[in-house]
Amino acid sequence: MTSYEQLFENNKKWIASMKARDVDFFEKLAKNQAPEYLYIGCSDSRVPANEIMGLEPGEVFVHRNIANVVANIDLNVMSVINYAVANLHVQHIIVCGHYNCGGVRAAMMPHDMGILNPWLRNIRDVYRLHQSELDMITDEHERYNRLVELNVQEQALNVIKTAVVQKSYLKNRYPTVHGWVFDLKTGELKDLKINFTKALQDIQKIYDLTGEF
Ligand code: CO
Image 1 (spheres, rainbow, N blue to C red):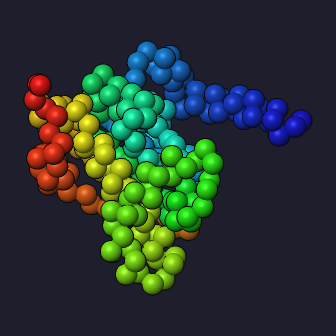
Image 2 (cartoon, protein in one colour; image 1 turned 90 degrees about the vertical axis):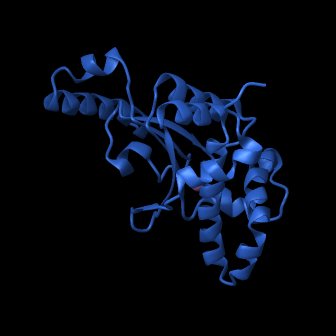
C-alpha cells in the first residue's frame, strides 16, 4: 500500500472510531453546523486547528492561509468572516499565529519573493507600523517572535475593522476577537490577551462602519 492509499485506510478507521463513540455521529454531523468559534490560522502543517484546541468536527469554522493574514481585499477571508458572523453567529473569532512561521520569516527578508510579494506586504507593513519597537530588539530570533505576535495583533485588528463584526457586536454583544500564538516547541497556546472592547473603541474614529452612508 502506498502512503497515498493509506489515507483512505485511515479514513475507514476514523469512521469506525467515531461510530464507536456515537453510532449516530455522522447522521448528526450532516444535519447542520453551529460552531461557537471562527479560527483564522496559518496553513502550516504543524498547526492543525481542531487538534490544538481539542475540538471535534462541527465545533470550529476554520480559515487558514500563509501567516494568518486578514487582508481587507481578500475575498476569501472576508467571505469567511461575513458568513461566520452573519450566518453562523460565532461567539468568538480567534486569530492564531505561531512561532517559527515561515511566512513571517520570509517577510523579514527584503527579497523579491515573486507571487508572494503582495501577500507578504501585509506582514512587512506590520513591521513598519511597529518598527521602533522591533528594531530595539537586538536578538534576531526574539525580534522574529515579536513580529509573529504583532502580526497576530494587527490581523485581529483587521477583523475588528470589518463592518460585519462591528455591527454584530453592537447588536448582539458578540463576537469578540482574540489573538493567540501557538508554540511549536511546547504545543502551548498563548493568549495575547487583546482587549477587544478597548481595541474596538480605539478604532472608532477612523473605522466605525456601523452607520449607514
Ligand atoms: Co506559519
